[in-house]
Image 1 (cartoon, rainbow, N blue to C red):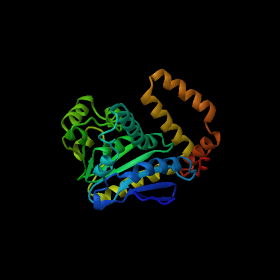
Image 2 (image 1 turned 45 degrees about the vertical axis):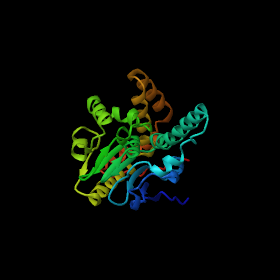
Image 3 (image 1 turned 90 degrees about the horizontal axis):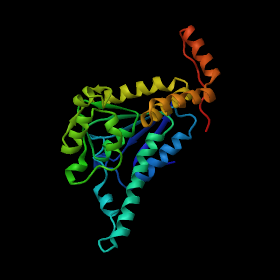
Image 4 (image 1 turned 135 degrees about the vertical axis):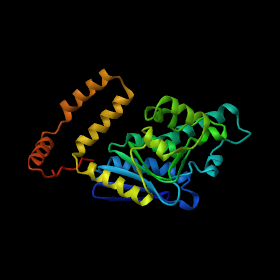
Length: 272
């Protein structure tokens, strides 16, 4: 399937999604909100994909939601207030669904971020499993700067990724959160010298994930997401049931034999 807001390339079990509107600082327009959900639903059903990298072209990762699109989605001024608010609530839920599709993708999603990452870009990055940044990257919870509450996932996901006080400071002030501070406080896992070095690093991490058992990686993501959203006892019950039903003896034997031989195991793809 062809996409207009980004490109998709799949090779060596890695799906590379690249935002491709650099002339508009990769603003997230109408097409993106439909296509993001579509591409992650497609990837979750693609048995050859074991890991996803989300990157972008140009100077900035993304300037956030396209303001022209945001304005066009507003209810008409003369609409009944209750009906207008119902329409707006449903539209926000639609937008949230794009990033929920990233969070729910059955394989890990890695974000490679250069330059500015504003507003909805922070929602996007926070929905990914791991974030990596170029030295020039910075994050801004832009919504507070335009008089609104961030509503697409930043305030729900990012507090689990950085300290509470820092989260509140960023959300209340809308200040710039630079790459070096994001690394020191755990929001990103690595800072590269530039965009090219960043992509090289992230693709190398993706390649290391791609050679693991895809069933074990998908199960690990499912467990981590479940543990994030539940208590320890529930998490322990869930992993016990998961491994009782989906532990692959075939993969364990392959992995053990490869380790003994100091080689690499070749694991079967997941099924659609």
